[in-house]
Length: 284
Length: 169
Image (cartoon, rainbow over all chains, first blue to last red; front, side, top):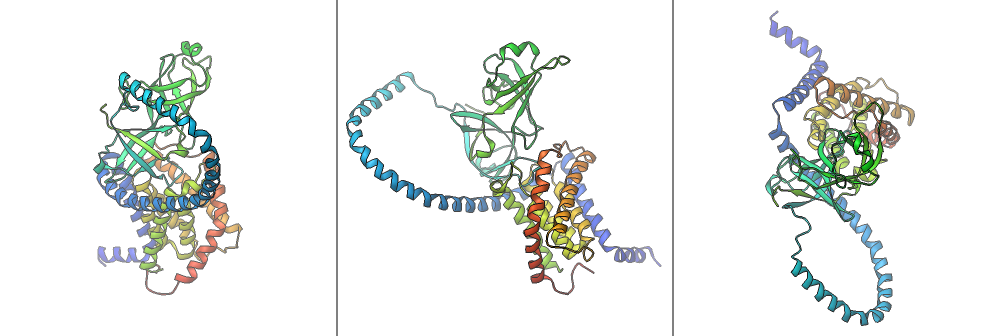
């Protein structure tokens, strides 16, 4: 019996095992090639296809949510309308003072030449999805390569009056992109305390932890650091521009045998409430 | 299970993965989402066998890899293995309405995490350590959802299961 005949008989008898190990071989080869040669183009093409469906479903979900919310809002609006009519009579007299104040404000702004709140050239984007697994906490947005997004772009968000660092772009598809947040354990951000100016390295604690760790801060800095002190990016050897807010000190301790402090930070951005982000283009 | 049905269930797994990424946060418990794709895959393979299960797992895993922040091929490997292993139990496992589905999904979740952990070591992938509080929450959440999803799969099986030419020899 020839080798090919025996081989075919063997495959026929062990069909399941052959198929199983074949698929495992393909998966392993993909993982290996991804981490060594990089299959970024293939992954980007596939990601673009799948994430467009993701954007569509996210839109449907938002529509249903908004429809349900609008019914309740209609009822509240009616109540508010009745109250507003009563107050209108009182406010009529204040209007003249308001117009005068607005004119004064405009003239002061022109004289001081206020800069724009956000000094960096930026690209706004909307969050359309999150990582489907619990192993990662990546965020998908609705802007991609065609909109000017590139890998390694820093990402920030605006919440409670502060622009805070969200993370960086790790994958730019055709019209969607993936962001790795600062809580990821593989994120390292060169940083410093805004008040005392001591430097350190902020590291994510992992995917489902809200806190960050700030490492390599010398012990002599301890008297000058308090709870709720702000930590910002230092801009040294970093893709992140200087001065972006990262978080506030939530825990501070030191061990006798260590030369640096144990500092835990609470990010200024609440990642469970992110809806819109800004990608920084690198020029001001 | 024939090729068309295998492809259909692969699309269901992919759709569940996309749903998890968009609406999953709304049903998250302490920021942990249930792994609906894994639950459905495990139940499908116990009903339809390893041959179909591993292909459904492979293509579903590839789609998940495109949506996650991890390397391409990681979830394909995990889901293919889950599809194969649990498919070996086709015809051998007696499913009661509550206990056995929960045990099966408990095993599936633990195996998923173990595979993720060991693949990270074998391929030096620098993956986040998976065994934290979130692991326990996901195990409990998946086990709770196993019961209604199991009953849904059984009703789907009655709809799609028929003798014929296909992957299962």
